[in-house]
Length: 378
Image (cartoon, rainbow, N blue to C red; front, side):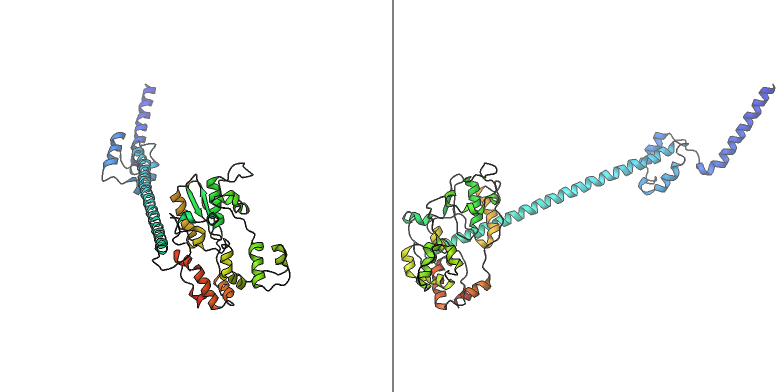
């Protein structure tokens, strides 16, 4: 009996102690929630009255302190990773769509610019070809030797500037000092006519082709291959005729230049304008008229390039030829004459000689659309 009475007393005291604990902690607990965990979670996801997790981080923190005692808190704390985890995915997907649309728009703009650029280049080419046809047909009233001559009547020695690439069906007429080194490099690569000593195979990069080799006439298939020595054939003639040089001239150009013996600019122009020069031989390629180098009235060119638009012309041409995937046009310095040099060179040249010189090259000015050099002629 004593033992049973002791157990009853202990039970009553324990019950009173539990009631006391409930009364003390009632405010902190906030009342009992008798809803099952799953039902409460479902209600919290769809109830408009339940505060969204993204706006109540402090609520989540305070509830986390009692999550171990009250399982219902787990439903509210579990909302935080679910909803905040879902939002970034939604944002990332939206952002990805925006970037994709932006890329598409940029691609469309690039394609439109490319089409516009090609249209401008095509239009410019048509204008250049039309000008050639007009001048060659006599519409501009500019006469020059060989304008109406048939191609078959052109001597072979006057066709030495037409370089042929049979593989790609290309004929290129080069004009000295008009990016001809780089264009010859392109032709060497296309025709595979030069072997690299390093790889033992034909060059594939135009810039890798040595400039001193690219001018070797044996590399290119042409209609004629004259090889002339400037000093012996031209310089010495100018000095004898117009230089008042007494005695014998040096045998080599190096000896002549080291002795200060060389033609002046005025002697050079006098040589060009001398009728005797024309009767003796055709001009050297460096001062021969372009219409005599390339015969634009006999050869129907599909493309006409100019030094002033070299980069865009080269890019456009390689695409038209369908070889832009094989190579790129080499970059390099242009040959341009400063205005101050022109003024200094022509300062001692009489006006009458200047005008006569212009008449000599006037067909080229007209054929290729260059303005009349009034500053030199007046």
